[in-house]
Length: 197
Image (tube, rainbow, N blue to C red; front, top):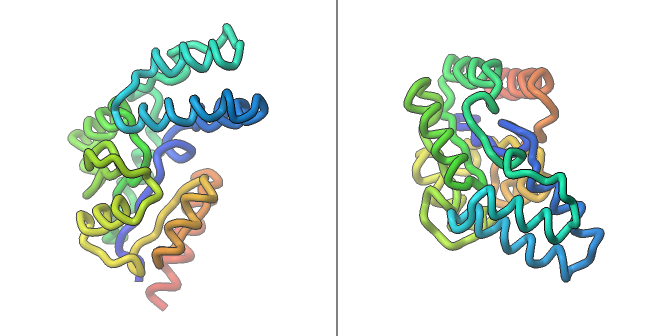
């Protein structure tokens, strides 16, 4: 029975500009892509800023149009419909969490939204846990499960990232691809109805 839902951040809450540029970097080979992957990892551990990320991507990819604003978030970046959707899920007696790569600004944004709307029981990831592990590690997922208080078999993850979903499934969690909110609402309603049946 699904008792808790963890949402990825990028690709669910807002488009994943990091992934878009990292995909582009792969075309330049490992000499370019390798350092940029390291930089993004540092960002998600709170050791780099959106400005540093934008400046490095601009230089390494020879793209003068890349601007820090692309990597900068505020509450206007989050759809009010998404917040309403998250709040509606509490009516199904579900515990909600974010389990994701979060930089300092993402964590602050989610914490602010949570203070205002009481959306989540858990905001989890390498940065909130102050752990040097990558997101897709047993230790990060184990800490998130401990905080939400449910075993893997009772948890659903929602992500647009196939590697994230595959890793979660390998731990015994149910995984749903994020394909937009109408599809997510339909899929969740079906899953919850099957749980009751």
